[in-house]
Image (cartoon, rainbow, N blue to C red):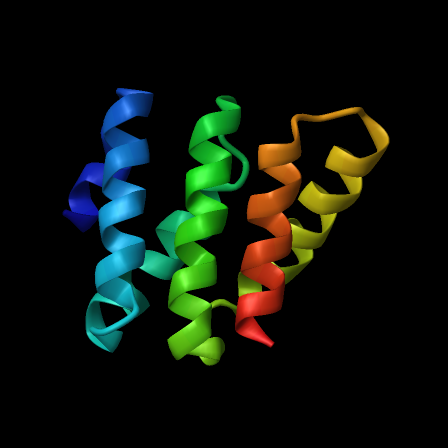
Length: 103
């Protein structure tokens, strides 16, 4: 499933991020492998990919805070950007969720 985070199809990435985020909550080894890939997806050109990556990192961070520290600066930038550009509420929600679940 983690390998699918590298798939060129954004919809495959979205589904993979969702699954990995749910699994990563319970399986630290999988979460450790997935966290850097999910962090990289926070910069993806498709907003839905970024949102799902943020949500997955929030799930992982809830159980394994140490694994998502590198994502925090990007999540904060996502949240600030969403607040200043009239972004969809969903984007703001995922960034907030990821940040608050890890604290």
